[in-house]
Image (cartoon, rainbow, N blue to C red; front, side):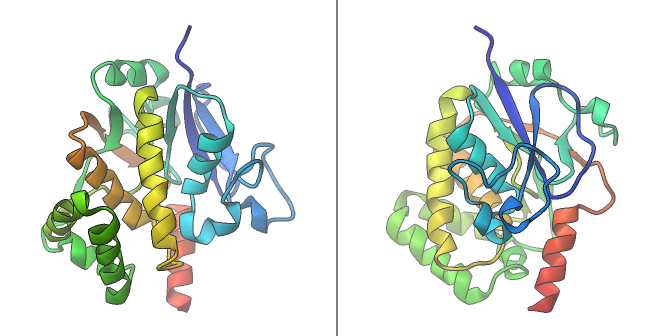
Length: 240
């Protein structure tokens, strides 16, 4: 039987997307809207659409995880796509065959890390969260995920990170990874109502390093000049 690959495309507004059947557009933040533009929405079934400001595009991933049928599952971030040639062309994103080839040898597909040599990951997190929140997250990991705590401290000192939470997960890894991923995020949500995208990228790192997972790192490209989700978040941040 053919492996069913599902890569969710979170859509806050109408936009173009690849026509390959593996890519699945879904309207996100639908809980807050009266007029909808897609039939598939993140406020259907078991969902976290009403927590969109905190989870943003990850609400699409959670919806698929809880409600859809798949073997391999992935999620994109706004207008960012995995690519092989760095061309801003929706016809040049990775295909079903690419994904199958990668996952024959790897457990997960993650974006290539971004170097920020003048800034540690701790300093980067400071731009999004208060020091009080970061300390509370540190205490949570130390207490409830102690096996990850040394890696967490190492991560804070590093000068590279995953820029955005987008990934594709092999069938055998889906349940283990997403149980861990959303398990921590839901606990951190009780600490802060801030956007958790940067925390999500940290969790990605902790998972693959601690569990020694084979991960294929693939370049990503922004199909638009400025991601819409970034615009929304930056606007909300300025109002605080």
